[in-house]
Each structure stands twice: as structure tokens, then as C-alpha cells.
Image (cartoon, rainbow, N blue to C red):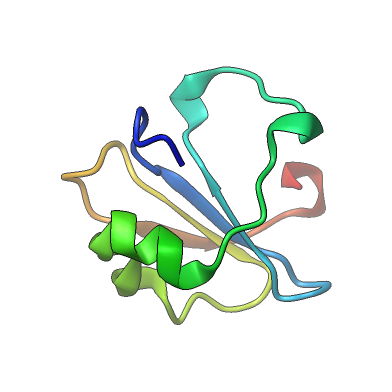
Length: 80
């Protein structure tokens, strides 16, 4: 949320419909670093997230960087 890293991985939880927005290159993170924010707040920081707004439950989207297209795939249990 600091804007230091671009979002390059988004997951939509099958169990509760929740969204996770991550940067895979930012290194390991702990649950203490997680933040609860509104979807609108995240999209206002990166409008390209509108492209995956219809991501189905249990799916994820990834990209190589902010200027690259999103790729969608069904998530495996091991990925979560």
C-alpha cells in the first residue's frame, strides 16, 4: 500500500471471495504485515486491476510487471 512495489499477483479466495494483492518480488511477508483495505482503494492506486475485476472465485491472475498483461489461471490448493 506504500506504492513501493507494483501489484503482480492477485488471488480471489474460493472460500470467502476475498482478494489478495501481492508483489512476488518483494520478498517474504508475515501475516502481521497484511492490511485490510477496500477494493476501491487498491484500484485507485492501480487502475489496471479493473481488467481482472471479474476474476472468478478460486482463480488468480499474474503478470511480469505493471506494463505487462494479466494471465489468469485456476488456483491449486497448494498455491494458497
